[in-house]
Length: 91
Image (cartoon, rainbow, N blue to C red; front, side):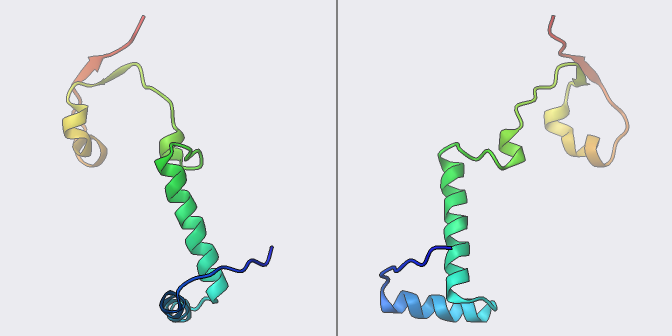
C-alpha cells in the first residue's frame, strides 16, 4: 500500500470517521472501500465493466424457445411446465 494525504472538509472527515467506527472499520479502510465502489460505478457507466458476468455475457441463444418467453418468463422459471415454442433458428 502507498500512504496518501488528502484534503477533505472537517465535517466530511468527522462524518466519515463516525460512520467507519459505527460499522467497525478504520477510516482508511472505509475510504479505500468507498473508492473501490466509486470506481466500480464509474467502470459500469463507461462500459468497462468486464468483471460483472451479467454485462460481459455476449452469448446469444438460437434455437427453439417459447413464443411468449419475454412476457411470461417468471412462469417458465418458477411455475409452469407447459411450453409453446417458436423456432428462432437461423440458417
